[in-house]
Each structure stands twice: as C-alpha cells, then as structure tokens.
Image 1 (cartoon, rainbow, N blue to C red):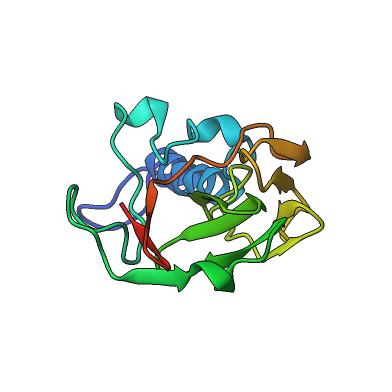
Image 2: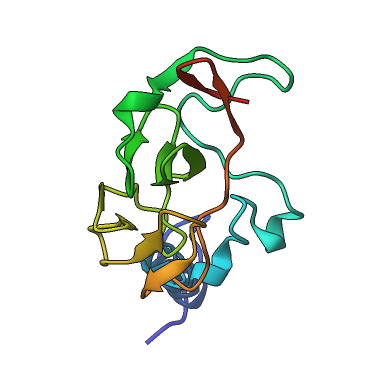
Amino acid sequence: MSDELTGPGTQTRRALLAGAGAVGVTVVLTACGTGDDDALDGTGSSPSAGGAPAPSGSAGAPAEGGGGAALAKKSDIPVGGGKIFAEQQVVVTQPTEGEFKAFSSICTHQQCPVTGVDGGTINCSCHFSKFSVADGSVKGGPARKPLPEQKIAVDGDNIVLA
C-alpha cells in the first residue's frame, strides 16, 4: 500500500492524518476548559494574558470620577441581604444597618453569574458556591477566591457606582 494518495497535488496520507489529529485535539482541549478558578485572579484578569481584563459582555461601571445613575435606593437593599444588578455585574449588600457593600456578581469558580442573596450569603446556583455579604469571602465551595469588591457611593438615599 502506498503512502501517497493518488492524483496530482495531493498530500501524503500521513500528513492528512496528522492534520486531522491536530484539529481533533484542539477541539477537545477547547471544550474542556481548566475547571480551575485559578484561571482568573479574582479581578477578571487572566495571569497568562498579562493581566488584561477579561471582556465583560455588558455595561460596567461608569468612567472613573463620574457618579453614575443610581443602582438602587438604600431601602431596596435588605439588612443582612442584598440585590443583584445583572446589567452592571454587581451585587449590592447591606451586612448591617446603614453599611453598604458591593461585589462582582460573577462567581470566581467558573464565572457564572450569581443568582441570589439569602441567609447572609451571595449564592451561585451553577456549582453552589456561597460568599459572605459582609466581605465577599468564600463561605462554601467549590469557589476558593472571594468575590472582588466593587466601588459604590451613597448619595443621599441612592446607591451609585463610584
């Protein structure tokens, strides 16, 4: 049996099979992902990408120094709980009366959006990670990194991204 395909200008069988194998490996590796929350450093940056921010795909905070539109009224955020603002990718919490905090609403485990705030935790329903409403720290895995804090300001009765 010959190593070459018949016809003018054709590749060798070996080259053809090697190319097909490389494509198959690439597809498998792309589909698998790392499954490791070390892929991002908790700030939306990939250490292997030179610290460049990961694309968010939706509106983020306003330019620095410009108080943006109000996210919520202070009375909208329950004490010991919080509210998720999906478009801005932020969750605002009120751990104690009058104290407001904000964190990324993207889970540090595999970048699913968090889905609820209940019982003093910010919860991700993808893999059931839980984060503290007070400081974003991990209260239950598989996440190992806290939610990154976001800057907000209280302007009268309104809570705005800072």
